[in-house]
Image 1 (cartoon, rainbow, N blue to C red):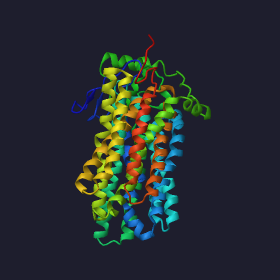
Image 2: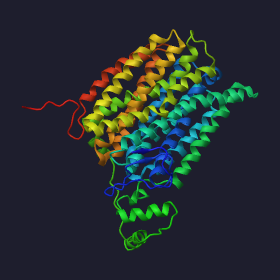
Image 3: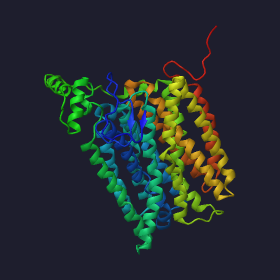
Image 4: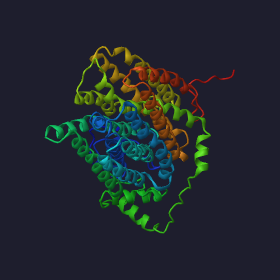
Length: 480
């Protein structure tokens, strides 16, 4: 259950078996559940301000560095492709050290190349710094891992989709605000060169600050610290009280403290080792490979389009848009994440309630097929800016909803390898982003990439019928 306007002080319902929350209260920020929920999406959102900071500033940067269209696209490809390596690496790190530490580390490290990008003076320097900025793209893995640790099976699809969607919305926010900020600095008297350089300092500071907050003010899991996640429910209750700075005032609460005090010498659980064998074990599962391919066709499409859309609208001759207006229209694509990815998760959870895991698979197929269809239609609307914007919004919705339905399935593949699988599937998205960005490079300032992407996504949508989750497929043929 998702509560929008419930009392912030009201405790969430919790499953006594695994201590995970079975509901979401969006206006609550208490530890551990909703604090982790809000910091997971906020961290991913802020990561996007650094990861995609350069894309909306490309009209300024391209002019100053005299970038060719190929060099501009090379930067986009490198920025997305480098996230593949970092995402694969981060999955096992989440399994071993917990999501909050990994999230904090990624944001703090990622803030460094974002800040240094303001000093770039050559096309090669821009490409190099964009490679290291790609570390921020790995924040998606702890974002999804975090909420999977906090919320139960009945609501995990919605939780993952909301935090992923609100995080992805950072791409749209970055596109619109950095374009406006650079234009504002330029109007205030700064040169075009200095305007984009000063603008890049803002996301660097934001990433560093939120990374520190992740480490000091959040919890990894219901039990608090990652190394204490196997504690008993009574021990967990005491941690909840301590984290929220409340003293127990009932006999039961006092009993919790007393019982826990007697268990202080319980040794911490051992942390399972994650190595190459774990990766290979996960990759042996056909479901993991299929979900990597599918995620490449939703999040990968999103990454490629986010990187190309501003220049596409700016350089389209029939539209004749200014740099600022091109950025504003392109921002619609990312801003749809306010609700699009979340509704994918809602639909996945709802279908699961009605049909079980087969419901999740059915929603996956429908969303992906419609995404491909509207991508394919988009080039036929480019004679009218209004029509192009409408279809842009439609394929944006289904692209991002597909991300939500995909991670509505991921937690059920193999819960014991959740971090590794999240990293692999997330890495699949980055691989798709790099491949599709190369398509945009091959056809600069052309609508052809949208046609190609549309066909690919419609074909891939049928792989939903090959997924076998918890022993069930979308279509099952029983022997007589």
